[in-house]
Image (cartoon, rainbow, N blue to C red; front, side, top):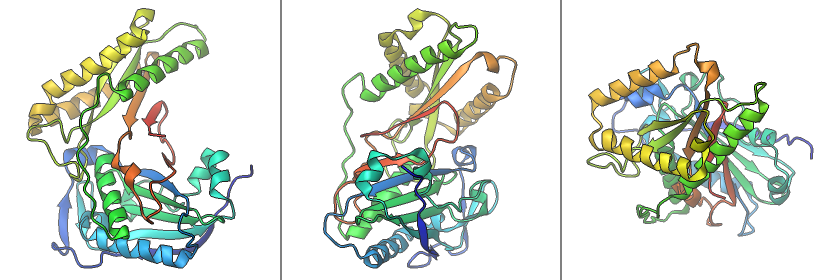
Length: 352
């Protein structure tokens, strides 16, 4: 299958439907926001057209109108990064482009290539990150069959995936013109499927790395797991709390086969999360945050031991409200995916 080349139909900036209440105000980025780096998180939603409406003008108009209305509730997203610590809430808006491809959605999903995924997000994303312009960058791509892909990239400095999910779901809800109640999901049985799948992938990654090494032996490895702090701190924050409220805990395995036994890895993940939550999650103060930041900086600073340790970073989008994003009344997306993983040995778990 040849690489897909979408035809760009239009480009524009969507401004909030009404001025934000803090006109020309400043939104201060937290330490966690600033520590997230100048990068975008790209997500693509795929929808099969179930109502027979192939009028791209109508579809696009509804998306732009609802986006404009949603931005009034997330006014920092319509602003611009002023410096490394603040956003100027100037209502400049979100970048919005439309594209068209002749392909059929079913065929694309059956034979999709990672290079094709990159074509479904705006190519104008600045290489040096969100300091250059829009904090929300969107591309709507219309397939020849009537299917639609919505590529959304949001600056990580402004929020983590949970906050981004809140914005996207509110946009989809606004588009449908209906208010939907979203209950906080109850805890799943232990061990969680994320823990099980993470342990399995990590075990396979370490084993594969040992086979590829010239020495042919197991190197020490670390597994770093992202944690959503919203429900883990006291008092807990609402699921739709916007901003970066994610941190990490790490487990380490050495060159012993026993440490890579599947039940052992699952137990380490569960114990690591429990220890993190008991130590930091329940009493996450500003002073502890600074200590964590300095500790992470010290661990990530280059040293002679880095070449002797394999590092793997895991994050999970499973059970995210992203999967409920219904923009057209056609139901949930048939598939969604991060458009790219920007760092090596980074694994993002998603629901099928």
